[in-house]
Image: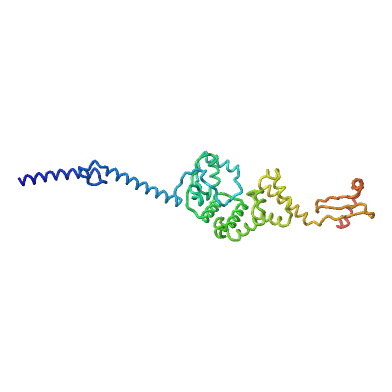
Length: 342
């Protein structure tokens, strides 16, 4: 009897063990489960926890890639603000239209670089790519961007270096960028790194902008073809001439309609004329009759002059002189010949 019971127990144990092995094979994650508790959701809980872990790990990996700037994402342009330092005197509308057409036909090939906005949660700030951002806004689509944690120094260096390699900023735009950085207390080393220039070139840039009023620079514009020497010439002329009516010229419609380089040249011409006038002596009374009944004064420069007659008979005397100008001019030529010996 004892042998029978032992054999039966052994048989039952083998069957149970086979069942457990089959269940374990069917549930490799959950492990061994006895028949009595097979209906409980242990396997489902384990699977859910596994999915949560995977999602968490993927989120961590995404966060790391974003922090390192390794991932290109699509952002709503409305959430992106410009850099806190402007590096250009406006975007040329013709160039912007060309960029809009390129992106429309071929997509945005080069992403912009942004950082999480330092003051506003959920917003971003551009390091470089302002023109691409403007073009994408016109098209009404999302912008492809790399998000990277950047300090202020890192942002302006990235901004400047990208412009050096991809965009031909004009001399005065680069000089303005340098001054704006200096005004915000960035070190000279940081500014030189951003612009890719040495100490001497930086000093000249800052000197030019300090001598030319910002409103004049903005009115003239980027003037892409005008280099350092011409801007230094303008600064020198400004130091010698009066500026009372410069802003009148700058606000004139015909001045604003000119291309930037022509606006620069108009300013040079005006200042040259004013510098010449400033160097001339003040008008003097050139002649008056013995009875002191009137006077004639001369105003002008070496190349341009006017005669003013002040007397009760001023118009009559002027007509009298005009009628004798042929003889006066011949006498003037003879006097010049006698002076020069010709």
